Image 1 (cartoon, rainbow, N blue to C red):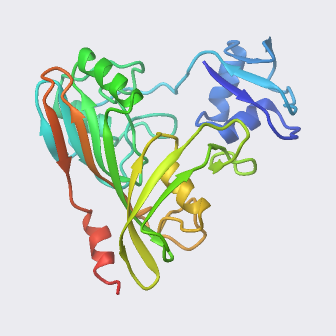
Image 2: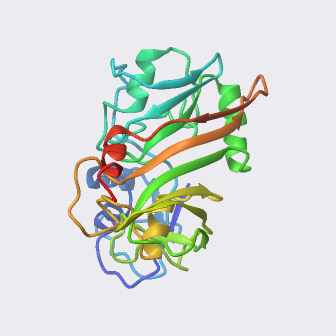
Image 3: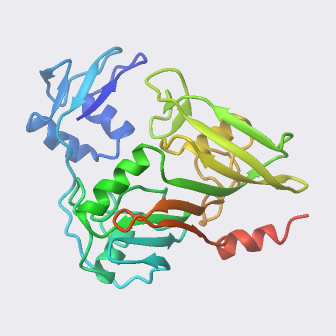
Length: 296
């Protein structure tokens, strides 16, 4: 169940409000309201209901558009694979799994072509998917090939046993070699599809940052997550005044199709069945590295 507390004054139809702050389309929200899968203050409401401050909205059943999962012959950069897990180096621009608005050409579609062995997970549209990275974030993502591996990995992520490091290029010069950003993250009050540092309906978020190299107008950094909030690195770096270069959401300059210069570069985990300690590191994408090579 998803719970949303309306924390600011608002006076708009619930179908419009929810389509702005969730990944559900307005037509799907209408269907969910009709089937009484959305409650306001524990009451069934119509689509014409006007949302008010302090309303508690519950989405009591997750819905998706009708999507057929189709295997697609999309090349995969597989870093490691055994009978239990697959470690993929995902390119920037690839969505991890199908959902509302993205029915194909995802990592899941590619995985289904690659293997018939993927865990079922908790969502039929996310076979094998234990964790996610943003569409325009490149790098390492871990996939489960059976339900037992999925269960163990999910617990390891929850208990912070899986360690991940990211490389990012940010705008401006960071003064300190090491900083820790400890700032809670929740929905942006104005642009509801964005996240923001806020004390309203937020969750703790901690990011450790180490400077790798300073350029004239940019800084190359390494980030390690202590928590895993949506857009956490992007939000935290924008919050301290150093947004990630080319980020189409959290900085205002014109961007290219490549998206934010953020790369999941390293992962350390325990193989869920064999219990082998594993560590992998992958280089930066070509577009990322080529841009670094132009800097001084």
